[in-house]
Image (cartoon, rainbow, N blue to C red; front, side, top):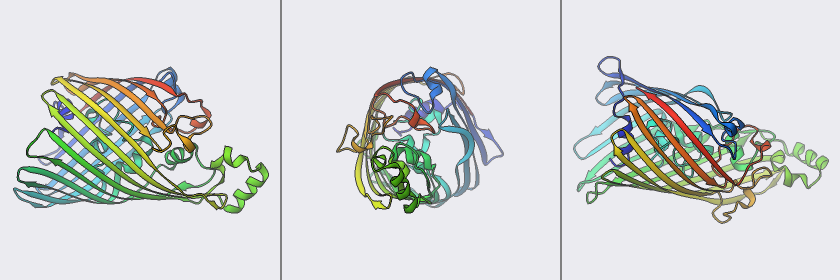
Length: 411
C-alpha cells in the first residue's frame, strides 16, 4: 500500500474509456520543457532550453473471464536526440490467474511483460506514477532502460498471506531486443566501429514483503541475471591491420575501433524499503550490479569484472490530495573500487564513472486529469547523464544542473 500512495493520489481522478462491460482504455500525453545549461541532456538543444521531450501512451485491457484477461500498451517517447518518438509496444500479454483462495494466489503471464525490478521499473513510463519528472537515475539507469523494462517470455506471479504477513512474488524469463548504441556508450563511452549487441537473455525474481507488525512498511528484493553478445564485430584481421596502420598508441585513444568481440553477463541485486507515515512517504533503494565482461581487442582477450553500486534516499510529502513534493539524494559508482571513474573515463567525458545528485520537485493536479510537474536536479559526475548519438563530440562538465517543467493529461 505504501508504494502506491503517491501515485494513487495523482492518478485517482483519471477516468478510463469503457469499451463494453469488460474492456477499458487508458492513456496519457506528457509534454515537458527541459533546460540543462551545463551539459547536453539527451541532446544539445537542452543547453538553451528545449520542448523536445514528449510522451504518449495508450493502455488497454479486456477481461475474458474473472481469471483470464488480455492487456497491452503502446508508447511513444521523444527525448531530443536520444529517442525519436517512434511508437512501440511497451507490453502485450495474456494473463491467467490459475489459483486463488483467501490465503494465496498464483498466475502466469505470457508475451511482452513488464519486469518488476525495484519499486519503479514497471511504472517508469507512466508520468503520474513517477515521484517527479523521472525515476531515480542512480538505480534506474537510462543505459539499461530498454534492457530491463520488459521481457518477451513468461512471467509467473503470486501472493501469499501467512500470519497476517503479506508476500508477493514474481519470476520471469525470456529475451529482449535492446538498443545496442546505448549499451555501447555505457561500456566504451562511444559506439564501436562495427557490430551491435543482439537480443538480451534474462531471468529475474522479485519479492515484496509487508509485515503484519508494521503495515506501513514495505520491503523488496529484486534479482536479475542477464547476458548479451556483440554480434558481427570487426574481424581480427581487419582490426590488426587498422592497428598496424594507426600505430600501437591508437588502441588506447580509440579502443572502440578495435573491438573484435564482447560478451557481458550481469547480475542485478536491488534492495528496497518504503515507509509511509501520515502524509509522508520515505523510500530507499540500494543496487549492486556485478558484471563480467569478456572483451577482445584486435584478437587479444582482455576480460574484466567489476561491481557497480548505487543508492538513493527519497522523501515525499503529500499535503493535499492534489499536491505532492519530494526531495531525493542519490549516488552511483560504475566501479565501486574506483569511485573517481578509473578505466571508465572517456576523452570528452572524464566524469562518467560516478554520479552524485540532489533533486527537488513537486506535482500539482490543478484540474481533474491535468497535472503539472516541476523538478530541479543538481549533479556532480555524469554517470547518469543520458547518452545520445554524437555525444562523444560534446564537451562534458563535472558539475551540471537541469530544470524541467511538464504538463500531463491522462484518462
